[in-house]
Length: 67
Ligand SMILES: [Zn+2]
Image (cartoon, rainbow, N blue to C red; front, side, top):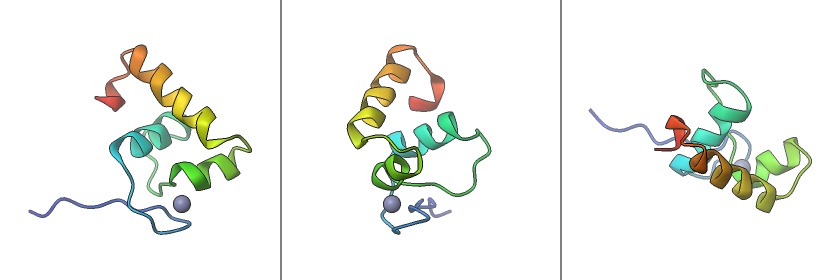
């Protein structure tokens, strides 16, 4: 079976594992439509750097979504 590539619902860019995990973490574990960091930063009205820091924080906390 072919692995499904997730793309950003707004710009169509392929998403990294970290981006997908962050969508699940910030929106819902069952989220069906994902956004890349650029589009997420607009939705959340923050910077891409803020989101990257969040990803690092969640990793440090040992969040299983980011493994
Ligand atoms: Zn995007």
